[in-house]
Image (cartoon, rainbow, N blue to C red; front, side):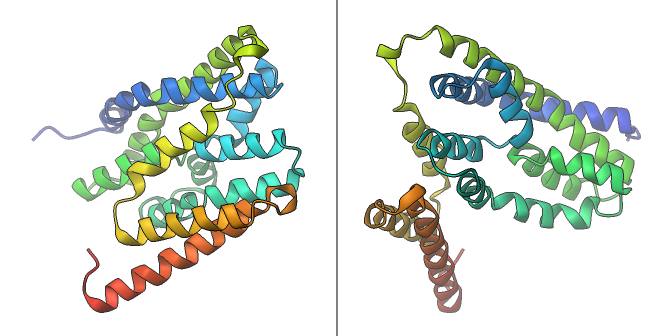
Length: 238
């Protein structure tokens, strides 16, 4: 078998990350359009994407800021939406945790759904890889994904500035969230958590600064954890 090099590992990662471009183009372009609709300039929309680099959190924060919510509330809600990144980080720590601090710091910025999912699978299939191979693959996945996210955000922002106010795309955000969430509802615990969160968000819709979203999210997470625990104890979890 031909020995793999860090360079070949990088290009393997690049090849595994490239197909995600097809998904990222409409998603990031839509964010740029919505950002322009919210009054952000092209540079501000790009800076937003570069600073956050998380689609669902970006849409959430933008929506709250558009509604006039305080910045702290917008940040707290975006962090709550993005809690899965903490789980990704914890899962990658045994695999990349022995890398130098500066490499881990750079890698932490590029932890997204694509880099996490591809890396975990690839590292399990190649237990003999050194840290150099692992980091090369990880950044290889990020290489086609992140630049397209930035670029399409700018493209969407440019397009958004050309769309007249009469064709406002405010409806795009809830539709986008539905497209994000629906594929994730794979177990009864997920469905229960989503159901409670929906009902709670309607009940607490009158709370100031859109804090009902935080309350609904918290109740949904409690429900999901409770149902999952009960299913595990009953032996019905899989």
